[in-house]
Length: 298
View (spheres, rainbow, N blue to C red):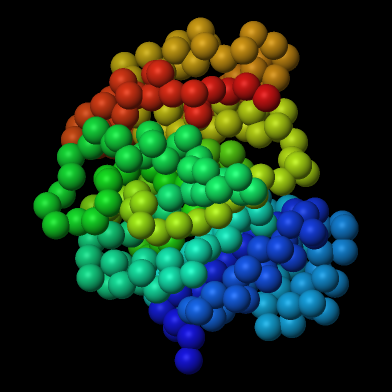
């Protein structure tokens, strides 16, 4: 009968071969989840591949690259109470989706579960997993895993009602660190997020990516999130830290310039988080200063 509690939403852009591998892996899961693919303006035959080789998949083609908000479109089409996200180069381990549904069902305060990411073809843990495991945040009694204040969308399962109530991913941020703003709004609404290493997601990094765009948007979105949700002293301190530590090149300048151009809407929509959440962000900042996974380099 499959697992009706979880649906999978995949966003893709011009990675036909990688998407085929991901869809084949999802089709072999014992959970037999309903799968929705959002074609973010593909020009490489992706839509035809999905129609002919994976006819069981629901294909959505908005006609342009929606970035992370393609996930919002996918979530709006499913009925399952929980939604697992995939990128076109990630897929879920057998049994992981059913286990995630069990945990979300057993703990109604949980909104997001992030899985351990196994990097293929080598089969080793992504370095970010160790950082997530060492979370310094307060661990609510009885909850699974390690507490988070953000998550990794391509390796996470969300509670659909919480996701939709928080508004999903921001169209302004588009793609690149887009999870942080949504996570802050979920936490503000009282939801809890956790890294649960017993859940496993596989990642075979695609070579079809634009690292320069990723870095530019990463810098811009970090600054936007900082000024949208952090208190003034923290926003100033974080901005100065980024200015000192990002590579001194045109890409970094472009990221800062884009952030500055967005300042009018950022200030208009600024809503500072509660002191207890800010305390959590400051704890995470202290730990992340030595991180090699968060450097804005190409």
